[in-house]
Image (cartoon, rainbow, N blue to C red; front, side, top):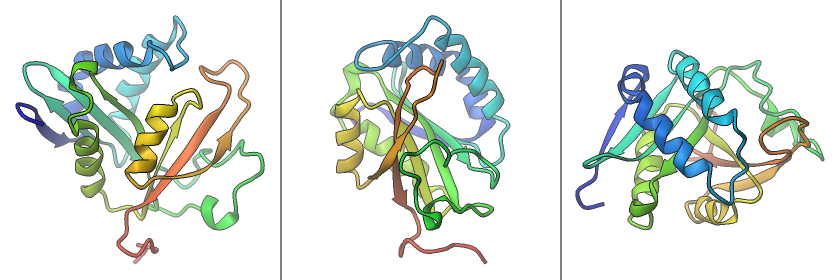
Length: 189
């Protein structure tokens, strides 16, 4: 990663770098192969502001002279609707939530000039190694095949496809999961 350093934190770190995160988000996700709308920039900025205060929020930033990448997410609440919209429906052992079971990796982005240097891997590994949940999940637009290949290379498993969603940025989303507990087991105490 050379001259890039990683910083792990929570809501206050994301608040200090909010504008830089939003600029990089807009740059990365407004380009092909991602779906984009003229309201997406504002929707993301508002969502990040709200998410910074969510229980279990975590963020890691990759920085050099400027922000080179970020990854953030939060613990899924038990009543979250993450598991709805799958055809066919996912098995109950996958969809059953309990307090602290699942970390949702909501967004990950690396600036174009910094790709292929292990920064994305470093962001993911740093963020996930700080977590106490049993597993992590993420969704990816189906058109982002290179992004999906990277996740599979890092050990994430595709669980299924959500959708169709009318009026959403992407009508479909592919869901990936990875075990965080050493044995993939239940971390409830």
